[in-house]
Amino acid sequence: MEHISKQDTGYQTRWDDQIVITGAGGFIGGSLARHFHDRGFTRIRALDRKPLPEWYQRVEGVECLSMDVSEKENAIRAVEGAVEVYNLAADMGGMGFIERFRVECLRSILINTHLIDAAWRAGARRYFFSSSACAYNTDLQKDPRSRALKESDAYPAMAERGYGWEKLISEMFCQEYWAERGLETHIARFHNIYGPNGTWFGGREKAPAAVCRKVIEARDTGDLSIEIWGDGAQTRSFCYIDDCVSGIDRIMHTDALIATPVNLGSCELIAINDLVTMVEEIAGVKLKRTYDPGAPKGVAGRNSDNTFIRKVLGWEPQTPLRTGMERTYAWIERQCADRKAGKRVVQD
Image (cartoon, rainbow, N blue to C red; front, side, top):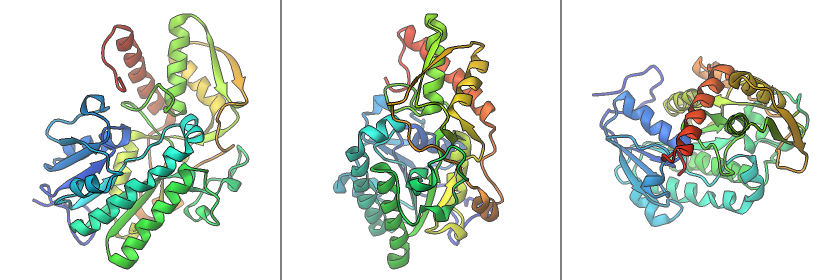
C-alpha cells in the first residue's frame, strides 16, 4: 500500500518501506518516530546513543537501537535497507550549552558525514538533515528588532561559532550528495522547537522550557523570583513540536525542496521578557525579576521569514505561541510533580 499525498515526489513511500530516524531518543527525533508510527508506517528504525532507558520517548512497534552514529560502522549498520533516512542526531541544547560546548557541537559533523555517505551507499531514496537558524549570518541578528531571516541570509557566511558552522557545512554535504551523487536530500532550518517531551532541565533546555520550569519552581518553593539571562530584550520565534514534525514530513516529500534549505519555524516574534510574562499569566503568579548580563544569551534578535515555505508548500507552522506554551507548561508541571514524588521523568 502506498502513501498518497499531493506532495509526494517521483517515488511514493510505501507503508512498509524502511524509515530510519537518528536522534530518536531525544525530543524531535522521538516525536518524529511517533508521527510516522501514528500515520501507519510499519518499519521504523529509531537510533540514539543514549541507553534505551534514557530515551525521552519509546514508541511501541518501533525498532529502537542504542548506537552512536558518529562512528562509521554504526552509521552503516543504521541505514541497512533504508528507503528514507532522517538525521535528527546532534550534540546540542539551548544557548547555555551551545555557547559553552562548541567542540562537542562541531563534532556532530561526524554524524552527518558518515550517515549521508552510508545512506547513499545503501541505496536510500531520500535523506533529511535537521539544520538550524544558527546557520544564519550573525551580523544580521544584532538588534532585537532585526528583520526576519530569509533562506538566502546564510550567505555571506558568518554562522554562530561551533553549532552554526557545523550545520552550514553539513548542509553543503547534503547539497553536494544530490548534485554529484544523485541522493535526494532535504534540509530544514529549525527555529527554536519546543513542546512536551522535550528537554526541561539540566542545562540543555531552551528558553520556553527553562522559563516554565523556573516559574513552576518559584511557585512551588514560595521564592517568587526568577533570573533571566541577559536583559530579557532579546527576541526569538518558537515553533511548536507538532508543527515541526508535520513540516519535516512535508519538506521531505516535496520536489521543489530537494537540496534546498528552508526555514521551519514560526514567525511570531516575542521578547524573552514577554515570554516570562506569558508564563506568569499561565501559572497565575507574578515574580520579581533579576538579570544576569554575563549569562549566555545568543544573538539579539532572530525570527523566521516564512515567505518561501508558504510559496512552496502553501503551509507554515500554525500553533499560536500561547497555545503551545500552555501545553508545554502543563506537561512540565506534571514532570516536576512526578519528580518530587520520586517517579521517573523525561531525562532521568
